[in-house]
Length: 56
Image (cartoon, rainbow, N blue to C red; front, side):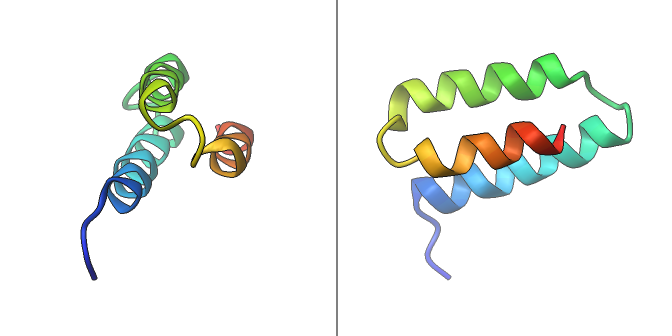
């Protein structure tokens, strides 16, 4: 598997969501990451961010 920015985003987001579900971090941390990353890659993430936000 090639690590590109999209795969890296999915990996980090998965780790953040799991940590949030275990109450190790707050959902605000996850939301901030999603916001910051979407500023960089906004066009590609339109279909990804909504399901992730629904998971937390």
